Image (tube, rainbow, N blue to C red; front, side):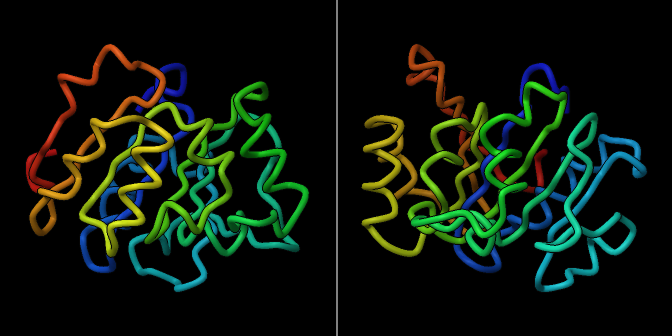
Length: 174
């Protein structure tokens, strides 16, 4: 994962689809001492990384921060801590890469989906979830409705010309 190209990553999908496994794959591209993880479920996949929480923020420069269950810190209505708002809104200015993972796109703060440079979308729980993505990123997100188990689409939200080349991949193929 190259910070210059994909410095703001959003992952969403139903439970058990592979969000945490994909996030684990992405953070393994980084040296372990530069990775900080917010993981309220204490997933074993992230046991080797430094932890952050509301009272123990990650560094403000030169790192990767994974917010697993991101809606717990950056909910749809508000941020739970100032450092989370700074991370999402201004982290890129300080060479901070973030990965936010959540079950449903509409449960995270709109800034997360607005500022994401790449999104990995697994099958979603409800039709309103897809409607949210269509509203945010256009009709190409309708393809999410056809995803099977452990399949995801990789979308580059800011590149609307790429609408015809949305990737639909099997997770095991990455």
